[in-house]
Image (cartoon, rainbow, N blue to C red; front, side, top):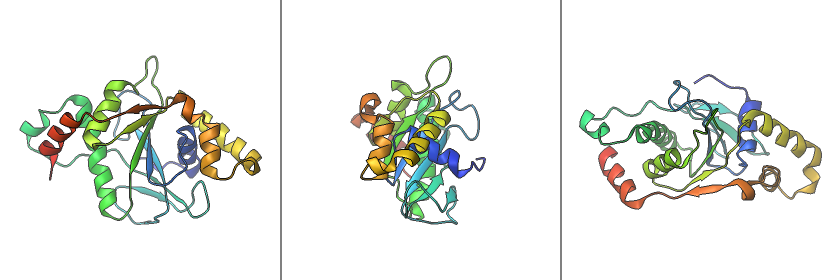
Length: 204
C-alpha cells in the first residue's frame, strides 16, 4: 500500500462521517480488486502502535489523543483451493480485509466497526452485494455512506470543522453533522446463516 499523507486519511474519515476510534473507513474508488491497494482505508484509534505489521501509522489524528492508521487490503491467508472455491468473488475480496484486520487486532489495535464510502464511475461499487459480502465475511453490521468525491468532500468538511469548531461539543459530533451521516447512511446486516458458513470455512 502506498503511504498516503495524513491529510488524505483524515479527509477519508471525515467524508465517511467517522471520528470515533476503532471504526475502519473503506473507500471503494475504482473497480473491485483493481489493484493491490484497492480499496483504501483509514481508521482513528487511541492505541498507538507505530511498529505494527500490516498497517501504516500516523501519530496524529482528528482529535487530541488520537492516532491514525491505514490497513492494506490483503493478501489473505493461504487456504485450500476447495475452501476458496466455496466463496463468491466478492467474498474472497472481503476475506482479504478480514485477514488483514485480524492481524492488526492480534497486535493490540482494536477494529470494531466498518463504514464503506466512495463510488466508481459510471456505477457505484458500493452496492448491496459487496456490502453484504463484507458483512457476512466480517460477521458484523456494515454501514454504507455513499460519497462520489471522498477527497474533496472530506477536505471541505475538515475546513468547515476548523472554521466552526466552537459550534460543536466534540469533533465526532461535528464531523457526523457536517457529513450528514443520518441522511445518507444505509445499514447492511450480516446474513447469519451465511456468516456462520463462511466462519466454518475460513477458521484458522
